[in-house]
Length: 74
Image (cartoon, rainbow, N blue to C red; front, side, top):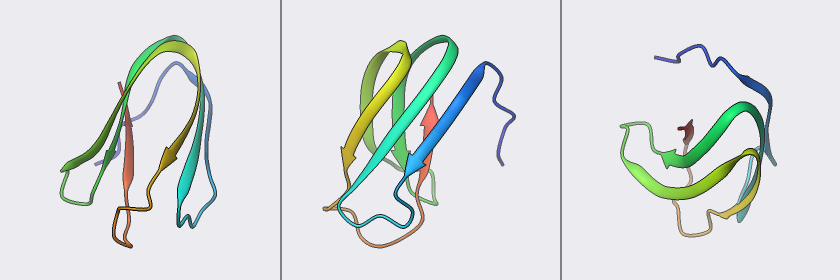
């Protein structure tokens, strides 16, 4: 399921579709501690440590097979 996200004032993930990298831009009222890239089964494929209310990350996805992925913000 997809939970309501409170406190996130900006969320942008580009490009879509992506082949080599994704750009994740987030602005939050509370500090974001991690980003997880997960497959459709919930398996964590990438775990990115961050510590900010403004996150601007470029994440390489070249090694991931074509598919649908989810970003979990924690």
